[in-house]
Length: 300
Image 1 (cartoon, rainbow, N blue to C red):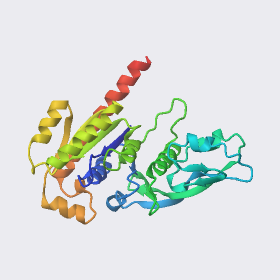
Image 2 (cartoon, helix red, strand yellow):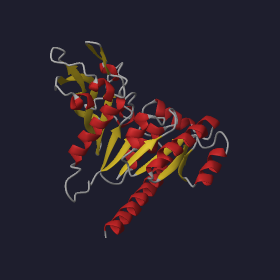
Image 3 (cartoon, rainbow, N blue to C red):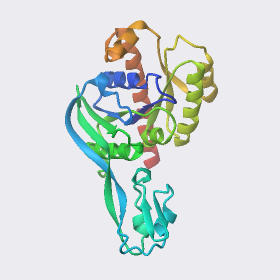
Image 4 (spheres, one colour):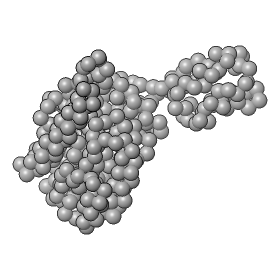
């Protein structure tokens, strides 16, 4: 089962929830930080990093001595990463999404593959949990390709895709905040989404955006309200209105803030906090069991 911990905006406590879920998760689990622009799950899980892999993406390299300047490469590129001006070909590697369309349509086959560094993938262990993290190169704006590489390496490590095999390891993903391309890339192939929010007007506004964006995926979603005893009850009213279950509420307490500031996992600081996340994990396990049962009925 893959579960994304997401939020409509930053600063809601998404990583706090993810780290505590990893701590209380009752089965084998992999913790994955896909917030590659600003990864911070490792600050709480303190993993032992076993390997680091530099990764890049394919970009076009044009041999202009053999180019007919037909413009087919420029016409297919939706991101304006390649242009043909008379008898000059210009490429913009920073705008390339690495789809390879220009290479596929080139009639002379004079576009070869170059490489642009994206960042790195770190893999290790955090206690009993496997740990994966993508870290985008400073100045790099293209995070989805690196996120896909992290997912690909994770799938290879878990043996996903083998005929009839279901991974014995659950995956908890710390997703990027917001609802733009990076966030959608993180949640798009998950089995359930935990939306972390706070009961303030700003929190509610972004929760609505996340509900509208991620709702298109038709996967189970529930809400965790962080700092639940501040703000107002509008968030609860919205959840009731649209049928979003509130899976957990985390109080606004000084000891939680102190634990966060010192890089500690909230669930291990107090039995009451452990109980909150243990209950959340049980609810997510129930969601997984219902999904499994539904799929078995569909396949029967």
